[in-house]
Image 1 (tube, rainbow, N blue to C red):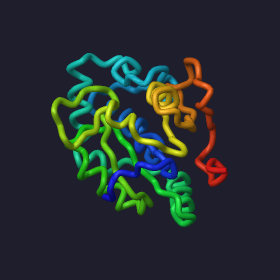
Image 2 (cartoon, rainbow, N blue to C red):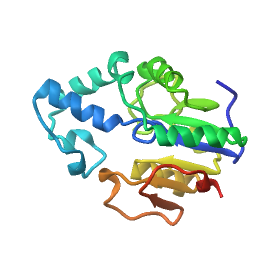
Image 3 (cartoon, rainbow, N blue to C red):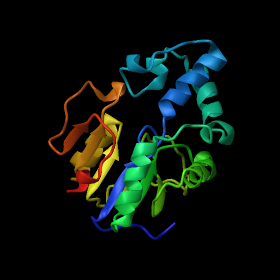
Image 4 (cartoon, rainbow, N blue to C red):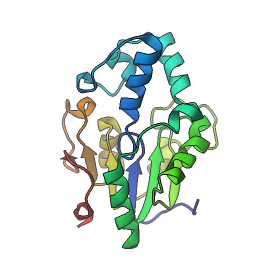
Length: 201
């Protein structure tokens, strides 16, 4: 996309469960492939293997399928949040869509953003969970920590804490079942609804 947005005018927007219903789609895949029905509201941790009671082999299998182009392109959008991004960009706000998806999912992820007319200026893959080995298409957390944003939108409490503590970034943590346990850093504010324009005020 564009060169790195190095000033504090850009807004960081996570992709999964902020712009699209990724976890709900993942749970449907678990039920379809493993015959295991897991309630969305029962997900008490960000680790889906733990929340869904999956073995390492089961988790690797389902994650591999989930990150295929076929499955990623089927994930339903969160239309209200996408519309807010359009409003922000119409007012000159720069949007960096950030994801921790594996790099093999880049093309399908960008295609999904285009299909749903998501307004953004930059797409960044960050090795949020330290699982990529020598992949130049992903940015390390250490490298990413040099960035500055006026606001970050996240659903992961761990990543929200990193942004707030290590990057001194205000964070809007979208309320999800898996982020309700734990202490919020003073720079983190929990939001229970959809994104709205006044988040930037």
